[in-house]
Length: 257
Ligand code: SF4
Image (cartoon, rainbow, N blue to C red):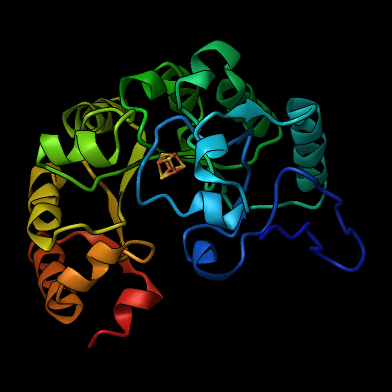
């Protein structure tokens, strides 16, 4: 659900594209923007068709939102006016580096706009190499930039079946490494968790170049019944503590104690 911003009594910025996510999504970011409707990565566990009340078939044929960059520029100007300091996430209900963005380049325009208005951006993507196109912008304003990827599978056959048109895990990890090597703050979203063993291994494989982990569970798929969430919660905290990493456990996983 989207809610336009009502920040202070005096300023009351009116925004239409940058919004405050509600519920579980808010644990990830207090501000977000979705530049596209739908996403062509085709993940079978995707919650966004449900959240946006779109059938899956139409959701996987994405389009550009009407006048999105004009509206986004207006929103950014408003947020700068009221001194907003919270990062803006690109994106929740679409991937900022899906294939459509190769042609449209809206994510690049959005990052540029946020930086121009001295606003922070945090990227979350499964686009792999496609997302590296904009590292030049992120490295120019490292104090305002953060780059994150979602990692679910080590098993590439499973990844192809369940996230068919997203970049391979290997490619996503390489993009993380490159971001880190260029001085960009990095994070990994370990959500959804499909199989705990794979998630724990992904942490080991990335801990040298990832600054922060966000851990959730699987919510919108029958596979969630096959996981011992209590055991996973204990194991994942131990692993991250042993490696000395900073992390956040989402509320729906935290309750398995
Ligand atoms: S990348 Fe994200 S938005 Fe796109 S289909 Fe996969 S889960 Fe949904």
